[in-house]
Amino acid sequence: MASPEIENLASALARLPGLGPRSARRAVLWLVKHRQTALAQLVEALQVVERRLVECATCGNVDTTDPCSICADPRRDAKAICVVEEVADLWALDRAKLFNGKFHVLGGRLSALDGVRPEDLAIDRLLARVEAGGVDEVVLAMNATLEGQTTAHYLAERLEQFPVRITQLAHGLPVGGELDYLDEGTLAQALRARRPLT
Ligand SMILES: [Zn+2]
Image (cartoon, rainbow, N blue to C red; front, side):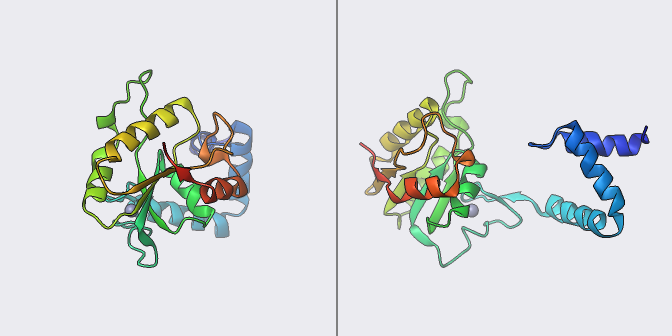
């Protein structure tokens, strides 16, 4: 029905999470209809992000600056570091606006099944940040999955050598739950009730 170019756009959009082929087609139609306003704006926004996207060398966040806006923010408490598995978890926790410290993205979780070893994650970079000093608390905010908890315990062992308090999210988190999918209230509750990791 449509030209290959329009089909191309529809199939690119269909690959976005939460969009299937039908919604993608609807989005394309909407963009065609609003090409003067919304389409130009979308193209511009995509280009800017595409040009400027970088990974923060300190925490692993993805932003348009390095250090990222969180690492560079002087109002944030550098004495507390919240460790998460993925950038999506960092964004979810940051949206909840209850943690005013810094973050650290591991880039995954330990998994014997998927062959993910400690050296595959940003663990050395975390230890270096703690070793550099000025950190009082490390919050281990892994997912409440078996692999997430294995990772948390591994990190707790590695962090034992430093004079820092190690805490963990309270598990009002649903078992098997992924942080990214929780509502902000549940996340806020879990963060507020964080407890020492034993
Ligand atoms: Zn950063």
